[in-house]
Length: 191
Image 1 (cartoon, rainbow, N blue to C red):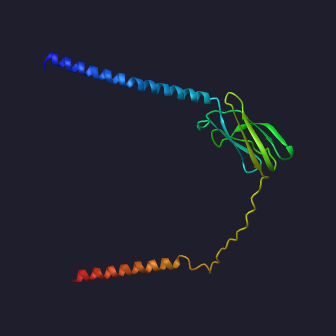
Image 2 (spheres, rainbow, N blue to C red):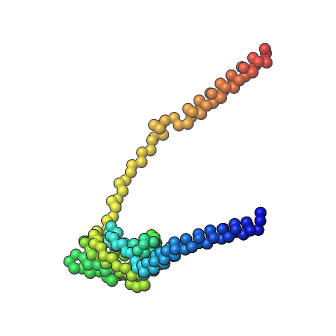
Image 3 (cartoon, one colour):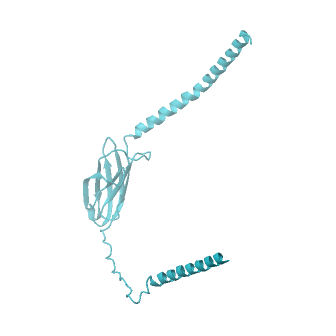
């Protein structure tokens, strides 16, 4: 191969690489711009919370706090509950503490009385959020006492013969097997 031919091939390879890089550059720039825009949107939402307020089935309230994009809350935040109930009753402000049931899970405990309540939960800066929900509070109910269960124990003579018949049958089978083995063993030695 001549030197001129090698130079021509190297030049063609370099021109091809240069064209590939220049063709990909606008796409890479657009991808970088999209990534920067997504990061700016996440930063704008980073200081907000999504709060879901619900009754606990009795006289309390539960709150699930997450980031707006649905990620679980990875830090403790301060949540404050206020509520207005039947006949204008008011509760709060009550500061809520995180519960061990999961990340971002908060519970008020027994703070309401039976009736329909309008509950508002606020989270101040740096992670702000607000949610309002209507909660139906019910008086806590105790489960009914269990009914006594009668235990029927069979009488000694009414419960069957136990394990003795099976043991006797097993001994009889073993004895028969030995007798059969001895008879067949003797026949072979005599013939």
